[in-house]
Image 1 (tube, rainbow, N blue to C red):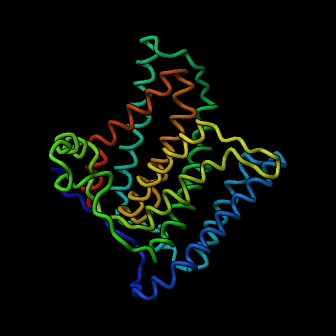
Image 2 (image 1 turned 90 degrees about the vertical axis):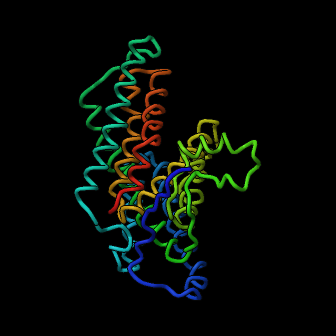
Image 3 (image 1 turned 90 degrees about the horizontal axis):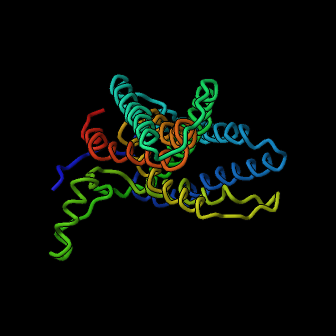
Length: 301
């Protein structure tokens, strides 16, 4: 059985009575849903004007800051650092695994003939890194984990005691062996909250389907790739959310989000196209979840 892993819960900054939480759920849902809907409307409008590259993410940052400003408690919404050295340690750890190990795997696949040689341009590597860091990693984590998740966790306070794990004693004996093996690899024990789950799935993951839709231009295509991206976003959104709860801020979620998206859609394809660009991030993520993520959950911030 996996050793219990505890992560810190909400960083609300104040106690909320049960009756206040219940009565506050509808306003919290409406507030966060309205701001996310506003983002999509802005993004669709800008896309219809062929201005849909950078400005939508700028709008997302502005909307997130507006949501935080409404409540006047930046520290409760991820604007705090509990332990700078550990933030730096784990950020470098994630970058080393995702970009370093993943890059090595991409080159190895290329050497084995599992991918076509890419074109590495230093200027593109740098500009893409800045774009994915600021306009993808930071913008999305500020909005979803900084604002939405923090706001929902104020009222959706139900706790969960495990992440991706199962209680094997409630299952038939024939399944226990397999699930014990599964839990030893990916059965993380960590206290996290219902608002994190709602954010990861309903606000972050599933809305990725809307990236293939724009009513203002008559675009209504949803491909199989879009559905796969939405499904993976639900899972990764949960990981980012737990990181947010554990650290109390969005620094590590931003770095992790950036490293995954940048390596998958820019860096690795520039090294080796085809199969290699798919294998590299998968191997890097597998290694990350095999041991480092467990150590992260066990760490104290």
